[in-house]
Image (cartoon, rainbow, N blue to C red; front, side, top):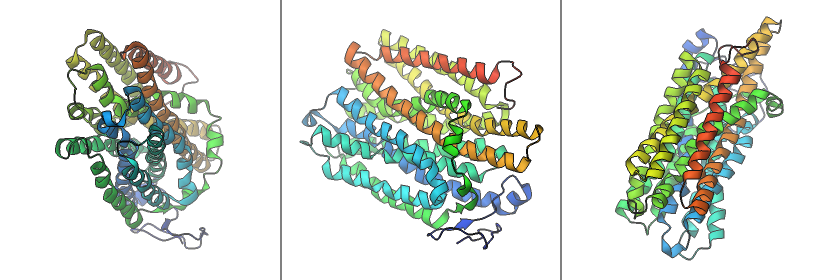
Length: 460
């Protein structure tokens, strides 16, 4: 049924499919009177519990970046095998982001958040059951793949929160939502560090036992405090339509560079340190002390990327961010050839920071693109209300598509490291590939969004 929540008007006459859940009708955040009368408080409440669920999802998704540090000689897995174990959940999570995006429109944001949060129990419990010396590598790969369900939560969460906020606040809201979720990567690595320092590398199950009650709390919080929006249910055929738009593929390429780098480095950083600087990181706990730092800083700065994009434009921030990422990759390459650990850490931490900043600015560009196209259609005589609804529909779809393709970039990062270390015994080839990709990204950003041209979209 459809209900009123916190003073927001509701229409009981609107037919909503019979299913459990709380629904809000006539959601109009662009109406400032509506927003001030209670819309902002409802949006904020949904944002808070969306962040909590997405945070745990990211932790489960990146669980194997921690668990590989516990896989000592008794497991008989080499460095290439460990990179593969971190690549598989990244790939599964990337694929799941597409159906997760449209699950919000099909089932409702609150309903899907409850289900997707509870689903995280499956990979955690499965891993707790099979993780012990003597387990086959195939079994580990299968269970690691199941952890990919945590990667899907981001797409549904971002699509849901995008519908709650007005255009003027989307950059900050999406940045907070994504940044709070991204911190889950650093959080699980901190938990892993704590377990390594206390229980020791022989007790990886402790990490899993910590997350079981947290997953239950995230699902319960979504059930008690989140809402569904009936307006989101009209977004039919959005994926088909948005895939016909050239900007979809431009933004997907850029998001591979930002989010793909963030999640790929987050999964691989601990292994890279142990393989490339064996003498300095002879034990897993030494690597764990530094592994969490990059994802933490990259997550914390992501809202700043959205905030800056709200003020100076997403394309401008994204362009200069890719320039900085290329410079950071060059620094890592120099540090690797010189075998300078200090310089290597500075360059890699900079990569994390700029990838986080770019995540925020790139996501802000998505609704801005369709808002600019909507304004052009209105000038050409289109109905303003219909044009606005179409812009929100396509923006929500592109958030999911770009998120999925961007997450696939994390797979490419791990595979690049795996092949580089297998072939050259160093990560240098991977660093060169990253530098080249970032150069392509800032060139594309300039040509499509910033180069003076009568066809350029204004305000992106």
